Length: 504
Image 1: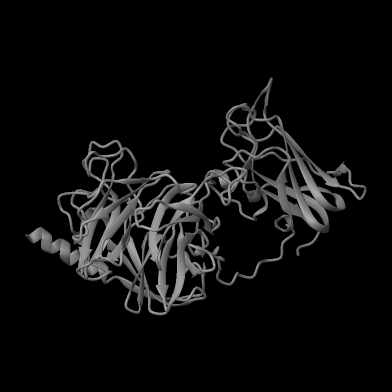
Image 2 (image 1 turned 120 degrees about the vertical axis):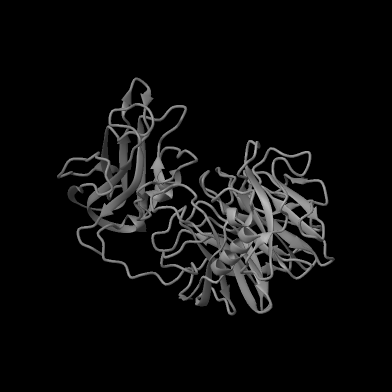
């Protein structure tokens, strides 16, 4: 009993940890002091609560480090900015669930139950389990959305690879819970293309049906969000069906937010389209709330100061519907951003061009990263362009920058990515060599007159390759891969800068 009192006291103190701030637009908290991900909004009266996990990865760490949940609170939310309160550390997996391990405070949701209490549906890892995947979904309860939360089902998780019988073989994360107008409760969960739905009993914890497996939502990857408007049920989710015909995901690492509709909460579901295109983070996660008869989509990005794929921050924008369609369709959301900081003058005008690859770009890499003005220290594949092909990487690759009007240039810098040493014929070593051409007035590719060597050093601050001034609408880089005899490594490019004679 003494230990329980200490836990409740500690949780109460944690729930009281609060700070106020003024947002200047999306993301809501943009200064990089605290990162947030996987938003789940809840409106109680005239107050908005947005539950999120807290990203704590180091700036160049490619790993989800998430130890706690936190809540953003506002009584007058506006995507353009406003006053907020942030309650940090409202719950931690092992503090709430005696059967859970530390960490992995992934995408959770709080809903107000039929009894007026607040239920936290949380994916956590079991501390002692023989399941091949130890993720499970627990339920905690509190008298307030800010906690303190206690386990509502102390016997263990309500869903894992072992429960309910006969079990499953998926990773059980990303729960979304919805209470229908008739008081019936529904839960969906699943990732890596697996989506399952259940009905819950009115106690909010007992699984009251067999699993409904959903396979009809195009590109479903993870992060479901179940909602209802009028008589139509909507399932929003993070989608990835990368390929030439993809409506939204240019690489296999990106996710957009798509949706489907149904006439009942357990389907059948029909794919309808895209709610939000890709954002600056590779992952995406939807949530929807309504205030003053206006719908809002909540999601996360990497747009905060020093943000990244594992240092995400929540944002939200207005969401509207096309009621001229049956069922009403969701109009694609326009993402908004806080006012941009004034940029320093720069000789690099590559971001004004369109990048393309003469070669086919492997699906995990992104050609647009070549001139996005970013040089990531520890990139994921969509953060750089690469010619690597597990079957056979090409010896020669070509990249092109094209401007809409004539530009004047006299230098370039190429920032290479490598995971193998120079001379290797596997993986991604530095290129053996490279050269540059410009499109001359006659429309022919002509070699620039280089005044310095073409550097192949792997550094995030490479030397400039200077050349005699040219006026052109396009540059083409020819990259020769390391290797020989038909076996070549890939060539990776983090950034390609095209330099004007003076800063602009």
